[in-house]
Length: 112
Length: 115
Image (cartoon, rainbow over all chains, first blue to last red; front, side, top):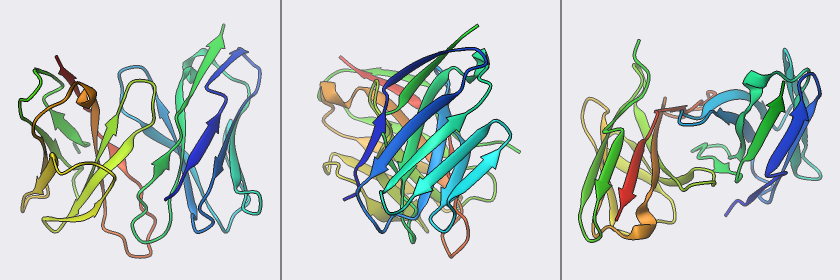
């Protein structure tokens, strides 16, 4: 089955800095890669996603890049703010069911 | 428009007991998936229900079972509870897959503690 590795497990940055979270996947058939943000005690919320026919996608301060050859994808957050502090999960899935396999999460801490 | 709702929010059980968790999907959604999220881990897929049938299943024992009702709501049942079953149980709803983009909306979860 699919295996998703996520790094780092914890990321501490100063407000205004950029943050990058990296994930690798094992199944070359995976073609949908969502990112979720989970604040403490709350539900995971989709923040951005990318499909395998696209190399990069941006939404305001958030961007995701995908390298299909290397089987890795990354989340980039620019101009970080304290409210960006949360656990971020990457996931990978493939067509048909779109059942995502999640990474173990990255705890992002943004210091004011 | 209500999102995905789960009940109860918290539950405490003892080893060997049985538990039932409930989920109402987002309006317009017909597919329900259940996940187990242990502390410090990502959600792990348990199973998915569509048209009142289990459509896919993850790597969980038969102690975990489910049901989907005609109104698309769903239940997760866990028998013979073990300490290791302590986790946040998340329900996610979506629209049945064709070739359309499928986004899963998560509920807030049920925190199960097994003592």
